[in-house]
Length: 96
Image 1 (cartoon, helix red, strand yellow):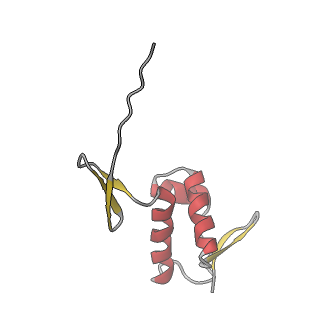
Image 2 (cartoon, rainbow, N blue to C red; image 1 turned 90 degrees about the horizontal axis):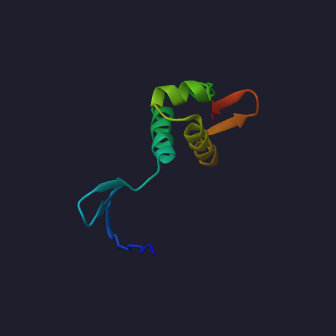
Image 3 (spheres, rainbow, N blue to C red; image 1 turned 60 degrees about the horizontal axis):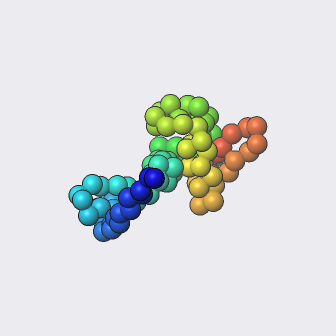
């Protein structure tokens, strides 16, 4: 018969980090949120110009070192924030 071990982990959240009781640090936000935040900074600081086309998912994934599904989620979040518009088959564009 197998016995299951159960344990409780408590977190203290400060800023963007959650500290576990045992001292390990975890990010509070997910990877796609962090990438969306970085892209938002680039858009707001005009690194990526208004009405400009964003690189494709594969190029963004390679530049951030993540998978395409993570990039897709980040782009959907930027779309929901009103920062970009996504056109099926054509790509993503910065909103003006």
